[in-house]
Structures are given as structure tokens and as C-alpha cells.
Length: 104
Image (cartoon, rainbow, N blue to C red; front, top):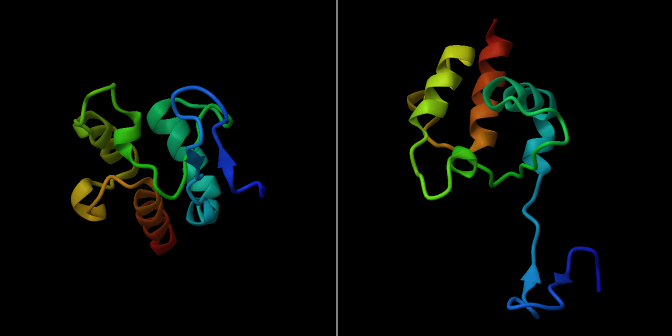
């Protein structure tokens, strides 16, 4: 079994395959991602796990789909809004933050 082919061996999900989401695009934004997670969520490196599929909903209260308070913070800190990005996907937010920094 390869390291990418993990299966749960016991419990109610026994036999189910675990597939880890890619982090290829997130790796391209390592520093902006670290800054963002610290500034917006007050996380230190190693206190979170994000992938190319991660979005702001992953960081809301359980059962909530309201990202407005997070977006308010993102807009205050980075001057980037949902209208600028078009999605809650973290990699897209990091891309827009990086794009704006490169214009300056």
C-alpha cells in the first residue's frame, strides 16, 4: 500500500479510503498563507492544516455557513473582499493578496 492509499482499519469507517487533498497550490503561497492564518485566525504555524480545497467555511463555528465576520477581518487587514476574490477558497484569497502586493 502506498502512502497515498490509506484505509481506515477499524471503527464504523473501516475499509474506507482516505485521500488527502493536494497542497500543491497552497505551497506556492506558503508565506502569505502563514501571515493570513496568523493575522485573521490568530493561529501559529503548525496549529492548522490547510489544503488546496480549504476555504473560510472550514474555520466557522460548527453548523454555521456565515463567513461575513471573517470577510470583515480579511477586508480590514488586507483590503481584499469577497467581491474581489469570488469565493471563500483560501488559495484564491492568497492569490489575490499576492497579486495586490506585487502591484505595489
